[in-house]
Image: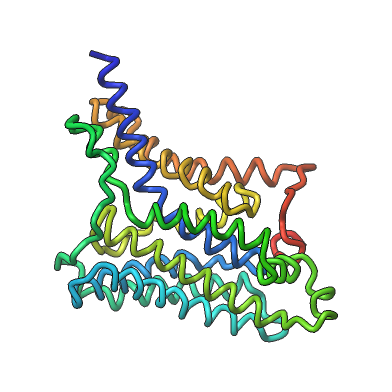
Length: 306
């Protein structure tokens, strides 16, 4: 009996890891692109909230969740452009701008999203990988978010982009040494602004995965700090798009642990298990920034490491 219960826990954690990791994956890939260019965007929480609201609202009004995903992406692009343009001016700190946009994006999403708290918008259809079984637990575990599949493909494409294309090399060069790339005639601010805007698009899509798939609703506390945790996730992944997949699954699995244990009657310490993603974030930050530890792979121009 116990073995069946723990098998159910493992299946629940597996399913929850995929569901909960989708926004982490998309946001971290967007931030990976931004940071590779030498700029950090700590305003992703605001982008996530705005994207979730825009995606849900457009899906409800249009009847198409895919239009909602695109709207969420463009909402994220808008905030990314504001961040990129603002940081193009001299003596403007990208972290301070990010904090301002975090507040702006969160407030804007909450204000404009009030009419959409009650209505039910059309949600994204799941990718069914459980055609071969009739076991309910397995069928539930293999209902995959289509944006998770997109995120895996995006991670592979970004890894190839950075390693094998001239634009990818330019982004990496700008992030490592702006002086050297400026001497070659490359426009530093243009590269960083475009990288931040495109990164914002992916972060906005991460918001849509929350409101249009799991949990599949819009409310003011939807993001739960995932945008901020994604910045730590990128550091943990060493600015590698492929490692972002594993890191996102780790964070998603930590978030799924509490509900999975509650499903078999383990409720003692439930709130502590629910705090697992935040404890994981804190643990990673303490480990990575411990005295004498050098963080490898960081772009040389990042404000955090200069």
